[in-house]
Length: 435
Ligand code: SF4
Ligand code: SF4
Image 1 (cartoon, helix red, strand yellow):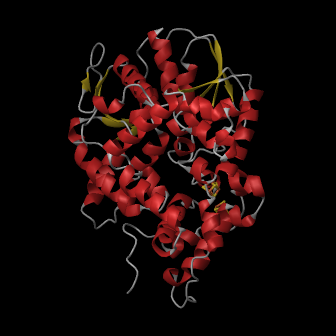
Image 2 (cartoon, protein in one colour):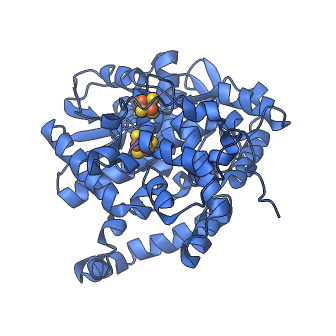
Image 3 (cartoon, protein in one colour):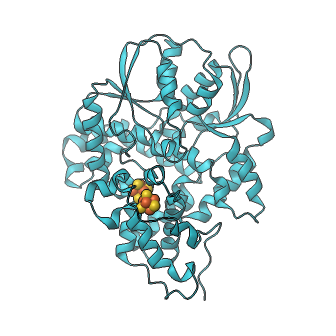
């Protein structure tokens, strides 16, 4: 029986051939910087993809080779940070290529049993089912608040099990979940300038409720009426990045139905990872599929909160803050959405703020979706380097634009005892407005 095709658009030979092997992306690639191995560079990975998928790409090609453990290993080790896209002068759309490679791996390669079952559960079921997220969050909250976590840490149990670093990466579960806010509308403070829909994410509902509340406060303070559509679900980023394309398409279909576009001027997200996927919803569907047009319109209305506020212009009074901060670019904001200036513009708008640029802020912190869980060692090496740079700035606070990066950097502060604060940029603005 022929294998089922991967749904949605498939990269063509021209997409791969755009890579002219110039190597200009090498120094931008975090994994190449770590290991100096061609096979773990963008160019090397594209070369492997062509080799493995060749019979699909051009006529009279030799048969494709089976997907090997080595190929899977090099593709798994890619952060999908897309720094190579920013560096590439030939316009290689590497994100599309690696996502297709991962979908092929999920279809044609048999991972070990436990990995297969876990991945299927997380990417197909867990992320798309709010009550499963709530149940898991309640259990985790019990572990964190009952004293079990403190005991496990102090007795060295986590170290013994090799889980000490992963434990630091766990989000602190909120007292109140943002799920209860779904379906609410928040009026603008003062005259209404615009009406927006707020895309709140999935895990963020249980681990970043405060950030979501702060986002609503900052938007309303700046004249936005904020609607939180009730039936929205996870954006599908984690699924599509991991090769679960149909699961991501199903989530996209539900979100397309949950956001009546004519009712809003924009769809706002505070998560760069989600925003990057929402802005590419049309890439999930082929041009001849019925969802494609709506997905394009949805993508065109999506804005990162920093991009939106910088373009709208801040009208809420910002109180001065005598404080040194530095800014870590989130890969899916900088490389995925090409947004560099908007967050910096917002930081510079805060009176008296001492904003210092972070060396190598364009290099991934090692968070990258669930990379820090699946490739913990590499992730921790990238984080250690990142924390060295944040310390060199003398900043008391590290600001970023993606909840995943916030978690990773907080783990970095804790593991490396840097005594710094980590905030999403919206939380910093919120403090300046309400102080
Ligand atoms: S910069 Fe672009 S064209 Fe050059 S090797 Fe990297 S991916 Fe290929
Ligand atoms: S996406 Fe990031 S880790 Fe992957 S090849 Fe490109 S630069 Fe390297």
